[in-house]
Length: 177
Image 1 (cartoon, rainbow, N blue to C red):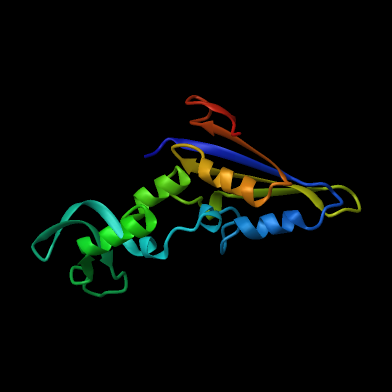
Image 2 (cartoon, helix red, strand yellow; image 1 turned 45 degrees about the horizontal axis):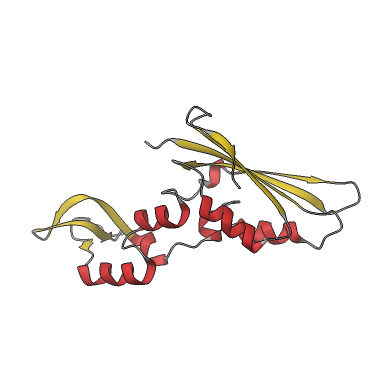
């Protein structure tokens, strides 16, 4: 079980600005997840179909990475080890050969946010478009700092503040920047 990091992200814009908040909402949303790390820094699709774990024996060979066809009525037959040449290609193409290492390298955490635990709150001045939106969610281990940096580059004229609290502040808390 990981140490949990509570993240609160504030985006605010000038009330007379163009629809920058709408652009932010679109940029951070993926399917039913209001704030998805995968929307901001997409994980290579191939890693979403790979299983990793302690070495398992498949067809008499030990492997720590495999594909599994979840619809296969004979699961022991639906498990296929990932060949080493593919792992080497993925390392060259993506900087990692599996989802876990890729996520840690690119998000600083091992999982995307949980859509059921992402909360969003919008504020507006009377007669204007929304002026701010606040997202709160949890990540494993610590804040996804590369995501923060990417958002700052994507929206240089938006005031972005990101507050983190690891293990309810017992392991640290403060503002990214």
